Image 1: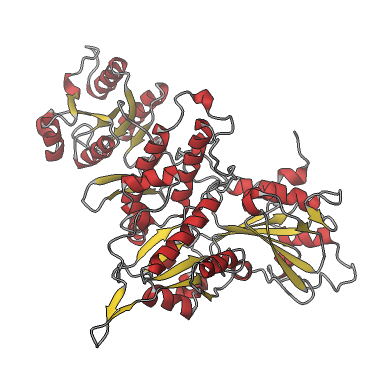
Image 2: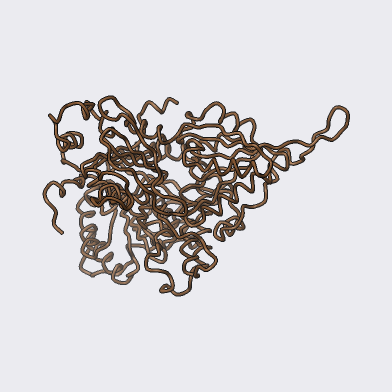
Length: 615
């Protein structure tokens, strides 16, 4: 359906100069390398690692090739073809003979999919004219070609890449590549090294284990595709799938679910583990733990690494005294390790024997916990939240009865939609009085990181925090519109269209109690607040659903902030929303706030303020 000019401009205009970064699957296909020097050997090695067959086509025979190519040919890893011996028209000579021989070879070798022309092509630096002839021959045949040092004769380029290894030195499936699109090849290598140095050494092993878990999930899937519901997200298991909503609701697990429903749940859980569990945990997962995750069972038995497994301590009089365990309910703040309270830091680093963590607690916080302390991550996946909650509470009581200090670690503040209250009552019923240690609430910290004051003189006199989903996924009543109030919705990003509809629908009742929100009301989606990959999508209620879809994959955890405070401190600021007597229309306010060269209907901001790098 055609849209008006303003809405057409809402999507960001493409800006040329980039490359379409792809990862080719070359199994069984042939990579043809023209040349036999060190660069040709490097291209051949990259292709071999991609399980491609490699043919080296060069003049001068194998004896003129570099040592690496000679050795690989001798071990049968690649095939060497002497270009001079290929059949060609008898009347042709020089470069023309080589070109026609190459065309004849391509006619007889249909499995060739990529061609790399290196600078040792004919035993001398190849001429521009010869390279152009090879390039145009490949283009006529629809074969992508890379020509060394001639960017305009390249259909593709090579990134500065790195393949990660496991602890035992074996290669893992994880690769990263960096390209500057010809603007700085040496700099690309430096950036790649910097990225690699900042990533966990376990990241390759983590990818390998997730691949094993995906295979287990697929092995349990229904044999017939038609048994899987139409809404099944196979792309949850595929790297190239565009999974925008990793927290999309799944019906609560039941004993009557079909095999197809069970398959859907397992697929979702693989995505959840990939999104939330620490890299170190993923890297250490055993196959039995993977099976347990997919089955939705209880956590593995406590690790033997836990100290104080003997719950008795000798007294100076040689009497045996029972060591009393304890449970601490601890808030970890929004995510940035520097925002931990001193009490939380002490509990994690000096007191804990066992940490039972919610899945939203980031790896940067878990990394502070001593290696000798066992850490378990709650399996609160869609459709399994109630079971996982019970599992965590029972595990805490079991460990405390053995005399251990248990830290129940939650994101933000435990009592702000952290289910701390029910845990307190449960632990008390089991004979333990837990200590609740507050944390910096994400409901307040996340807007601050996004440059949004939840209250601001002249804009917002109050704020309200609510949830976007009720117990067991049920709908909740959302508050109506009040101009001077900021509304903060936690756990609502996965249901953004429903939240927006509930807030803006004109009919009173339903999921809203009070007046409808105007469609031009500012709104911000804040994801991964305080973390390096923080993202803020700012728009209006009218356009925010399209804005979030346009931004790409979601980055949980996320929250929603709605109200005029969203634009209050942007740029030069606007703190007269409640005081200007109608001199400025709300539509004009929003236009100025979102104004840009493309007159976009939304804005996407990446990362927290640069000053946080100092903390």
